[in-house]
Amino acid sequence: MRSLERLTHRLGFRAGIFVFAAVACFASGLVSARRAGVIALAATVVSAASPRPAAAGTNGSDVRPFRASIPDKELVELRRKISATRWPTKELVEDRSQGVQLATLKALAHYWATDYDWRKAEARLNAYPQFVTTIDGVDIHFIHVKSRHPNAMPMIITHGWPGSAIELLEVIDPLTNPTAHGGSAADAFDVVVPSLPGYGFSGVPAERGWESGRIARAWAVLMERLGYTRYVAQGGDVGATVADAMGRQAAKGLAGIHLNLLAGAPAIADRLPAKTEKERAAHKALATFKATGFGYFLEQSTRPQTIGYSLLDSPVGLAAWLLDHDTDSYQKIARAFVDGKPTGNLTREHVLDNITLYWLTGTGASAARWYWEFGQVLAAAGGAAPPPVSVPVAFTTFPGEIFAAPRSWIETAYPGLAYFNEVDRGGHFAAWEEPALFASELRAAFKPLR
View 1: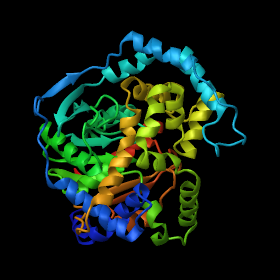
View 2: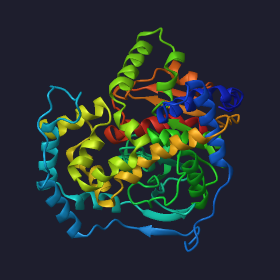
View 3: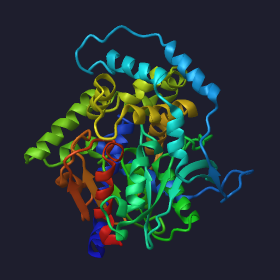
View 4: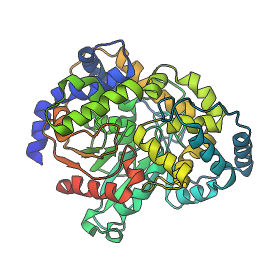
């Protein structure tokens, strides 16, 4: 593993150009892919440069217990607003090419207003130890579960959009209590699941600048505050960019990262191999996403406030926006509501747990701002040389992801890749949909680091 780490150091500049160039192009269509790579990497350097103290009046490094408790009147009002929805006419196509289909959303709204019980979700959350601590002026909500097994490896797992900490709940026990899920005591993790700033029960930033680099720095503070001197990080979607940034910042104590989304692929498609059947299939899926699946990203990276008004005013509008992410997850969620046939853990209840959390916390707009913040930092950054990824990188490809990245693509972005596997099921919300499989991948990926 150490030889791979040295190789990562030597080739990290090239990897950085690939990965961050793509995210930069996601955020802004005004810069070329090559220039965007330098700008984006510089943004990581700038973001990591100067930590800020907690805002005056906070308790500094205090870690406070937290329990979710939503007043009944808010749940009554939610049902009232669902029932008062003003519906559009049916889409004029037979697929999702015009957006979330009317039948899907009506089925969801009916179940939400009549059968869904938020209190069960609240109980699931409150079954885990939850805390809040102030970092860089923002209250960060997090779940922290310690394993009963000795020498458990600490791990921080970051969710993405349109998810939340709720999508990661079902992986906590398989990771912290592996002997009850087919693993051994030597596989145990201590698990930290923070809510991104502006998401869920975390505070909403009152100033600009909370992009992935700043979040990565906050996570390093959090792990140090919890007493961990050596740990690993995992992320998908937005979480993948945070974990990547932690690796480039050489966060103190970080031993390795695991990702399940190659966030940089869209902007570097012309540099990614296209010789094998898997590589060509990935290119086709990527092209489809860039042509027809990019709407949410474009809106949130340019006008998050505009869409935010609707997200906080209409629960059904919020649900539609959160569902309209990628074809695979949309089809699975639609089957759960329309046909009563959930895929894995993507049940009606669990999907609505996540949407209801967004509604009750009023975080539709603040969560969307991450896209704008990241794009602004990239556009404003200079051309400083990037830091390398300083730790081993592991990656798992799930077949239902927006594009199923083959090993050659991951090695293009992360030379010296320490672990790679392609599994047979799961999609963009891999931890949510297939928690047991996801947990087994993390055990395998981080085993050499124990």
